[in-house]
Image 1 (cartoon, rainbow, N blue to C red):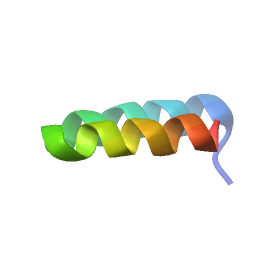
Image 2: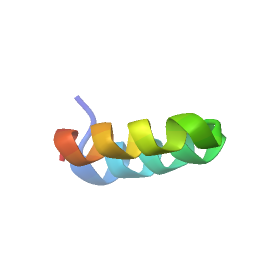
Image 3: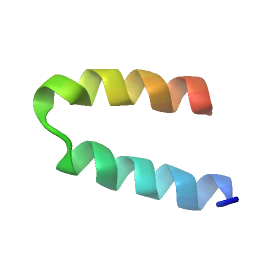
Image 4: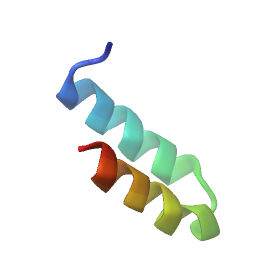
Length: 34
């Protein structure tokens, strides 16, 4: 399992690549994961 910093960076990259519509949904998932 990836550490918190790595997961945070990966999430940031994924959000950046994700479309604006999914950005909000992804952000919410990231908050729940953290």
